[in-house]
Image 1 (cartoon, protein in one colour):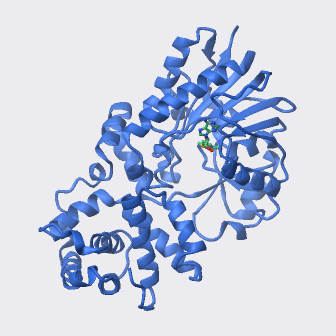
Image 2 (cartoon, helix red, strand yellow; image 1 turned 180 degrees about the vertical axis):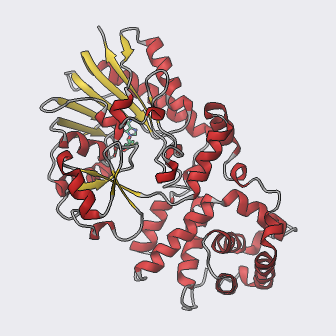
Image 3 (cartoon, helix red, strand yellow; image 1 turned 60 degrees about the vertical axis):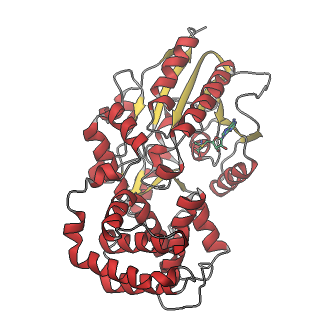
Length: 441
Ligand SMILES: C[S@@+](CC[C@H](N)C(=O)[O-])C[C@H]1O[C@@H](n2cnc3c(N)ncnc32)[C@H](O)[C@@H]1O
């Protein structure tokens, strides 16, 4: 793409288009592609508002991609030729701006046409872009008519999986909650200071103990960040570590620990934490998080499915690698980056790590297994199969009182099952699953 035009607003659009193309064309994570744009790409010297706008356009395009593509196919009846460059992406992002971001239609149309004009291949489709988007601004209701936007927002395999696991109503409510930007959730280092920080930050103290703020603005500029009084962590992600109970002064093994949200929680509860992960880069982030919050943990770079430390632990937290389909409201790209083949591969890895974790747990010890996935294979099915293989383990059911009295977060078996549509009126939460197991013999 040739970026010769410096018209205000155009760089943000061009960046948004590159972000969408990176996710859908190169299978890159949106956060990674965005980090490249702002550290070494065209957004490096852009104003914070432009960076935020580029991210918002890309995220919104992905959140509504299914509906956008159905509208696209009504607007562009003949398939675009192969050499149309970024024309499709330009249209997708402009549709997102007009329908979902409330951008003034003339600005969105003009800048989409400018974007097409700035590319050697797309410039031949300038008039088509112009005509299609002008039609959209005139006939939006007709063009959207009959589209089941909720159903369209989810790839087939996930739709089938969620409807089967939670029923169609909850699947639809989950999809609707993914359309909204997630709030900013914070875990406070010192439990007794939660109310104080809620007041200082103008945040809401949620029933589970997390603080909740509206997203937006620089996190680093908020009071308490510099001094490490808190860290960012989704409300649901903050629950599993606490299911280990009172770990003050106890040794806790945190398997698959980086970047360390749960390590920080365990350390702040007074545990002697050993944080293990196989990724040195992600462990560097964990080290930085420990340094900022003034907390301490031993760090091990190892494969959690093979590590032979020569000892056992009374407490183990295993936050296993997973498809992360429960985090789509924060990471809308996961819906398009992950496939059912990833789910099967990751589920096999989870089984191996879980079996190894069982060997590292002392008799009488507690193991909490969790994932941020909505797929049964990575949650309850995994645990059912584990309990079948390991007759010396049993569930210790989770009580509603341990999750702020929110009984809807606990399954009849006593596992944690949060859905993005839980507490929807208050901003929802990521989808997390957790089971608490004890080793009997
Ligand atoms: C869900 S993330 C962990 C998030 C972390 N517990 C937190 O709260 O910030 C999963 C982690 O598993 C790590 N991982 C994947 N496979 C692993 C393996 N075989 N052994 C150890 N770590 C692994 C990844 O590097 C990744 O950091």
